[in-house]
Length: 456
Ligand SMILES: *Cc1c(COP(=O)(O)O)cnc(C)c1O
Image (tube, rainbow, N blue to C red):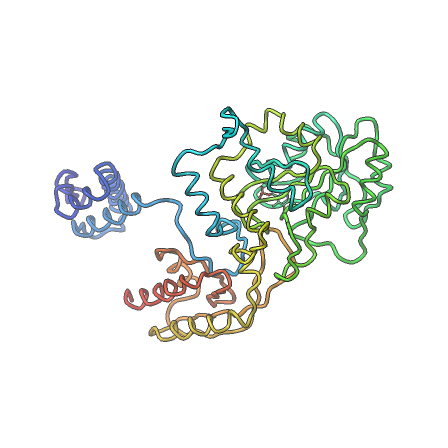
């Protein structure tokens, strides 16, 4: 059978592969051919192949090369109902953010140029002015993400000194962000106080010594300790810090800029309230509840933020013009009170009544595909991104089953569709939550099911 393997040149000269070469270029076709032939030899060696078909090889090469020519980063339809899905890129950007981003990216900008004086400027002037009016912050800096913000702040304010943290706040966010590890890497020495469920101001006070610099408060984000619990108010921590000439820093995680109770988000700490209570530096993410691009925001009092700005690591962690543009445009929507323009917030606000008719429409169209059975039932969506654990948003789900294919198989077929659709799997049903699906994407979901019917 090895002798039946066609010569590479012969294959490449076939009309279909020459067409392919015109579309994706010589390199990708040769690479795909090499890979397919290698796979073929392997199957022959394994004894899993009974004959060699040139047409079959050609088809494999086409698929391989087309795949290689496509982008690796692809748009995905999020039918999971998790709004700030970290694996799916967290917050979708507002149209205003996209427009400003394109404007900034397509040409030159005053990124680091002072147009008034005609001389070199600083890129942080663009972001510095954003959070004053919203949060009452004297200064704000933006870095790559909140993990970087926490790291940079600790490195600046407490390298070689001690940081006191409650044992109830020594959290892991996922993706290996753990407060003790970040602390260690920043060069700060962690002093744990209190217990998992109860920590008092007196616990912090007892741990303060001449090496202490910072009292760190961390938002537990993706879990809650309930029951017999206690932790000091921010005002108590601030009082204690002032007495000992220390700083209070708070890692807020999500970054709730305004009260979002009307949008279905309760009990998220507001950055502005922390600053009002006297916390010197707060940090939070740009792409969680804020609904903007990936970024880490450091906001608060002038003096500590000036020190953070002067840290050489700031240069290593700073953001590019695309992020600045998207963040500036998103925050300006907050300033103008146009929260409904931010997709993540709009998705949070959808009620079950808003979603039910859409779910019914999609279920009906899926059920019309032979072999499929789809029903609408009540369920829950979540905000995600470590925000509001334990708080669910009422939704209507489409539960799909198929006469022959298992739910896992259906999920795989949806993932392979272009654009890919990511759904939930629950008890051998495929579950679609349209809360996180843009209305214009509903057709694509139905098309993915119709395609399966044709392929079968
Ligand atoms: C999410 C989160 C982080 C990490 O933020 P990224 O922007 O993902 O880097 C850090 N701390 C807390 C409390 C968080 O919730």
